[in-house]
View 1 (cartoon, protein in one colour):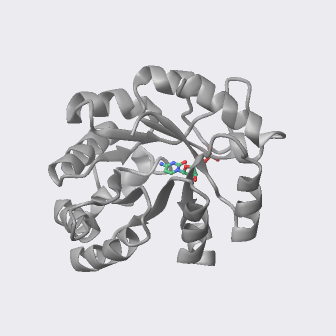
View 2: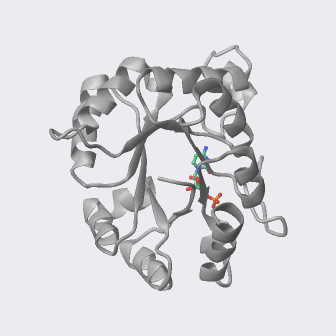
Length: 232
Ligand code: C5P
């Protein structure tokens, strides 16, 4: 799979999501389904979006004991999505179990990527709440290396970290990066942002774009601008 723009469909219902996707009559966007939509609508919404021909990143961020993650990944694998994820902080053994559960009898599987540290976690919270005393950028790189050691395909990270992750983990280790904004757009609650063109320059493989597309006056045009700047 080459570079692509993934739209974060952070809608509360299948109805809202499907009517949003109805607008896209040309290029079919790669869609991210998160916890809100999945917990509201279950696997049916995944199947409905898949049936319409979209590629899907199912962003459920699994984190549990290895056996539970393995069995859950087997269930997600049967949904035939394109990318799923888990938390790197669940340990290398948990990530290996995730990969095992995800792999179908014929050897095929969705791509598996890891969340390193959430971008909502800062140095202070990491030290005070999690008792991790290393600098956060070193922690992110260590978790990315753990994901690669476990055999995963890549990580979710800030576009600002994408270049370093490729340096440390290899050019073919995927970087999937949220926190993307147009130069003339609202930043909202994201802190460290980058434009689609800059994310491309730094080597992101996939950008995850939510509100700059979903809340735009013309979402199809906003998506087209992202594709133009990031993919074409
Ligand atoms: O609307 P916005 O473009 O900020 O959406 C970004 C999407 O990426 C949201 O679905 C958000 O939950 C997700 N995300 C993120 N930062 C992370 C991981 C996921 O913004 N570190």
